[in-house]
Image (cartoon, rainbow, N blue to C red; front, side, top):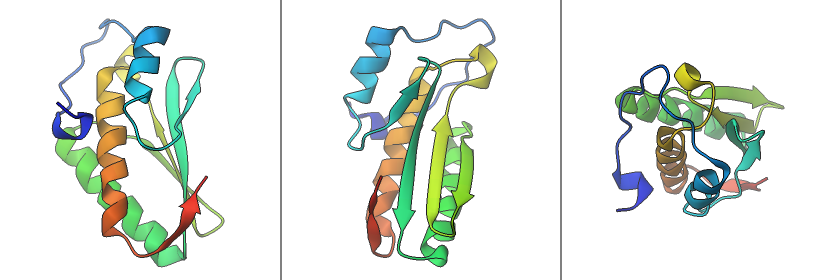
Length: 119
């Protein structure tokens, strides 16, 4: 089953973090080039045509994140760049939920106004 068809499951404190090989397997299932930091966080910067498109994207991410009950860090810079940073706070590392949400976020791109591209 594709990551975008799965749903985030509640994670408990002390749940195991993903290993480097598990992270590599999950990241290979994503379409975009997400950056892994210290095998602890995964992030991607999206670049949009204008401020309104960036804000629309942020709002769509918020809806998906709330539905999945898994909330990313969202950073808006330079009026058109949105960086999404995912990690699981309860385990201070990466969990399958982070990649499920990343896949769902990627799926949003087809519903947005023209983009200037991804970084």
